[in-house]
Amino acid sequence: MKITRRPMLTTILYGLLCGISFVPTVMVISSFVYWSTAFRLAIWLTLAGYLVILTKWGRASLLSILFPLLLLLLLVFWGDTNAAFLFLALGVLSWVRSGICFQGGLLKTLGAEFALCLGGGALVAFFTPHSAVTWGLAVWMFFLVQSLYFVFFRDLGEGVEEKVELDPFDLARSQAERILFTGLR
Image (cartoon, rainbow, N blue to C red):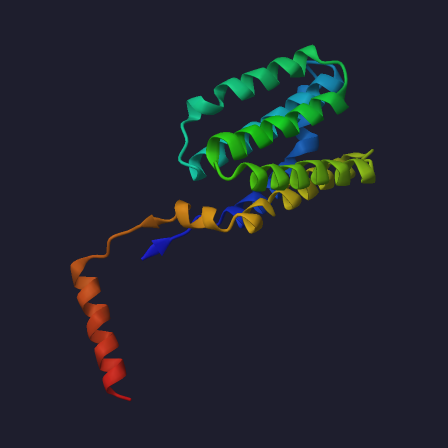
């Protein structure tokens, strides 16, 4: 019996959760720091959660994403522009996903990362979110585009599956049922 974690569906649902909670998160954080810093910190929290999920799927160590996340966290407080931070956040996402978690062929992963990260970022920038609702939708739309990564790399789902051993009694019962079912025809 195989249990699949379904990375595409999980990415979409995680994006929906982040989209719904993005504006309240920014509003809570903005009571402690400036709004632009709160915005970057909310993006960092969203990305950090997704990178933890990716490391679990890729069976990578959580320590392996510590440096990229700390580097991006420094840029939350050091950087001045949100656009530069978002561009660097896309780079960190690509670095962790294709460099640490799911290593593959260089040209194929570069093409997929370029298409998904810049395509998702450009799509969000094209719609220029300006209100709370549009920012929540933009975050979800970005994760919808990111879920396409698992369409391009279907073989990742096979590496994520776990074998679960059946109880010998259940295995014998299912074999007996199969024999009885095929014998009745």
